[in-house]
Amino acid sequence: MDCEDVRTYLLDDHRGQLAPELAREVRAHVERCAACAHDDAAEHALSELLERRLPQHPAPLALKRRLAAQWPAPGAAPAPWWPRWRRAVAPALAAALVLAVAAPWLAARLPGAARDAGAEGFMLWNAAGVYTRRALAEP
Amino acid sequence: MGGGAGTGAGAALGREALAYVDSLHNLARYLTGNASDADDLVQETYARALKAAERFTPGTNLKAWLFRILRNTFLSAYRRERNNPVSGGLDTVDPAAQGVADDHWLRDDMELDRLRKIVAGEIEAALMTLSDEARTVILLDLEGLTEVEVAQVVGCAVGTVKSRLARARLALRRQLKDYAR
Image 1 (spheres, rainbow over the protein chains, first blue to last red):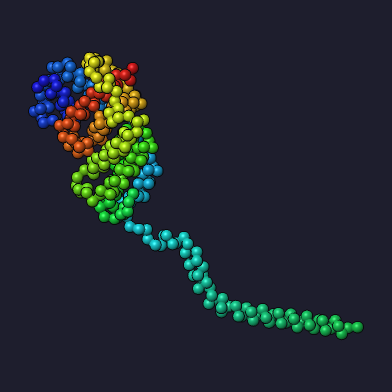
Image 2: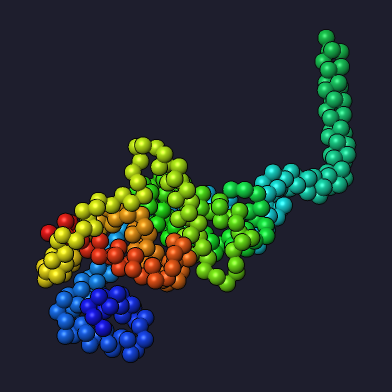
């Protein structure tokens, strides 16, 4: 195995991707060859440089949102009808419920109240009338 | 994107495909050289992937498949751009950067010290001087793709990937000597 062969295997050797026998051969060559030992160290340094210091450019959030909206997740069912309509319909339903409960009660109460109010009004009107007649009769 | 996003094979790929958006955007950014074009390239990649979803074989490497679509999308966009005299060629690397005239420097013990002092902006700038092909194999390798997967992405033999990667890394080392202090 010459230097050129060894250099093609260095990266695979760093990643443990060589067969044991081939890896031993490569290591043995690197230990006795200064040039290949230098390349071995430089490849290590370059890998570290790329892995640790190369700036990464992740997708911006706006792009992720656009893509997610255009390509929904598997099994994503359409939103149920209730949440979509709740905001618009809930106040009307609540008002209808209150009316449904209160209407019979009010129906039972209102005539009596009116009657009471009417009687009271009649008494007041009579009293006012008596008072007026007396006032007119007085010299 | 076209219709059918929520149905069939397209929806089946959905969440898994979107999990790779950061990796795709990173490669797109290094290919196009700017954030806006990278966004467009990634968006177009997903649009094409959605249209081709029926052709994806379940159980194979989705990430590599998406990278392949991104690369092909970039190349087709590049071919359109190539007719624009303002744009540069596919291999935008300075030929001198890949020369062999100063290979002795690579044997210099100072190389290791210099490599260790390189900062983020310098490694990025050095990478951007390489050809698109060299940048692609370096970045796909960094993404953890195997040589077989890289070969599928760039459409060449596995042995070619190995030699391209070795040449790309050597070119990067040569470039870095200009940034090292």
